Amino acid sequence: MDGSRDTAYSAQGTVWTTTLEGEEIQNAMAIAQDGVYIVSDHALYRFETDEQGAPRVDWRETYDRGTSIKPGSIDQGSGATPTLLGDDLITIGPNGTAYVGVYNGLIAVRDGDDG
Image (cartoon, rainbow, N blue to C red):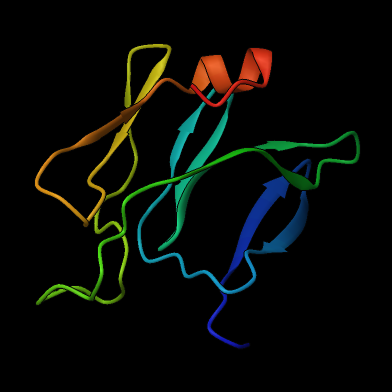
């Protein structure tokens, strides 16, 4: 592989994989009834399954990944697992700044708007 990571899911006893080309996943995922949330070194994702049970990207939101790899980090991206807050918010530590990015995933999912 060229630096990308495969992410595996199990749906109805079948294992499916998907590749985020040019991106790495170094954190755990957050799982909710509305999907699986994954943060790569470039973006925050929500995955759902298609009619066959294969994973598909429902939405993707880039974040401030900074300008370099910080000391103690594996890659130039978030060092945090996505955290679900209630039924409509998700948060990550974005790496580029001292703040915590909070994203309202339901707006992006339900109406196709990025925020």
